[in-house]
Image (tube, rainbow, N blue to C red; front, top):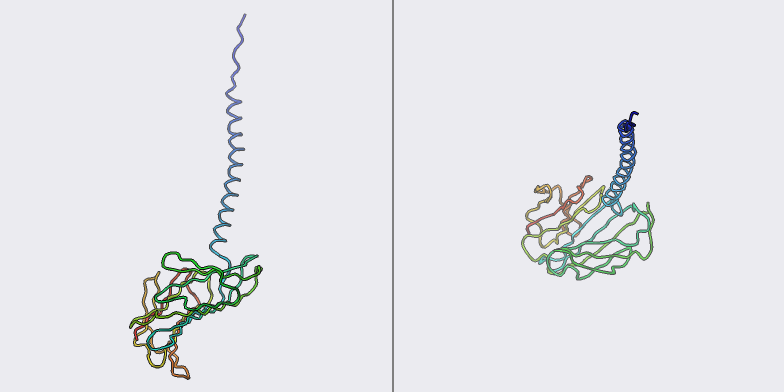
Length: 227
């Protein structure tokens, strides 16, 4: 009698395993695709931030010829990009008593903390704002004994996507600037500013302005002067 021969299952295995791998691979591809899409969404939201800045003017008003008192005037028109925005932050740094006085609108300054050489102010809006709303932010910050040196600077960092940026320094008529420069830190570029950037105000003060409709995100723009 012939003994039974073992069944050859290799063809079955050869057909099952590729099919199984295809199913598993398809599932993993779908999982990886969904994970990638989620990561892209999170990264995009972080990059966009809470709002776009439609217009940003940062003005330093030097109130006397000795640099004992100065006032920063910050004016921003912003468009909210997310729902339920109930607060925003302001930042400040520099020499002297940089928070001699602080006023903001809209909202109320509820907290202040330091990170490195910068200070951050948390401003509560006292209500939740919706996506698409336009806010006009006004901040006036007084500095004492911050500009009592022969070389001064007014520094601004563009922290949000901004359409129009303008930096201004107003000099008292008793002490006018002798030299003016615009410094772009990330680009490592310094540009001398001529008389076309200076406006003589009716009271004799000099107003120096530099502006751009293409400010670079995270760039630091500095108006530097000697006087």
